[in-house]
Length: 104
Image (cartoon, rainbow, N blue to C red; front, side):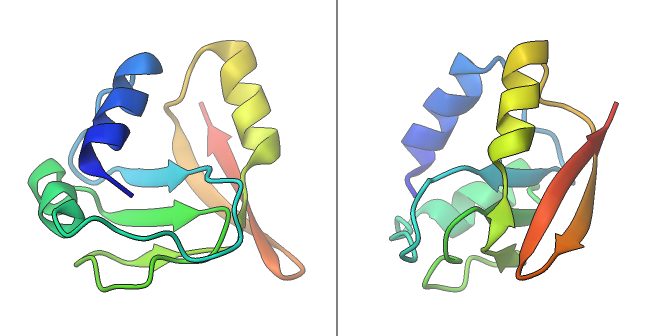
């Protein structure tokens, strides 16, 4: 998890990060991703409130709540079809995973 890669992804999707945002990362992986040493400072500088991933949670303290095991495939397909990545996030438990639902 590299701040430069996250900046590039946000720019490609025309997303503006705002204070109190929850950052959802679709990694398509199961192993805990390696977090760059600068990631915690980057999350703090952007005011990110929490981090959620579809794979395992990062293997280090990032200064914000971070959780893995989110089901993001359906949300990704919906956001891609709409061309919109903003909304009010709700986590809907589904067995061992949390489904991310956005209200727009």
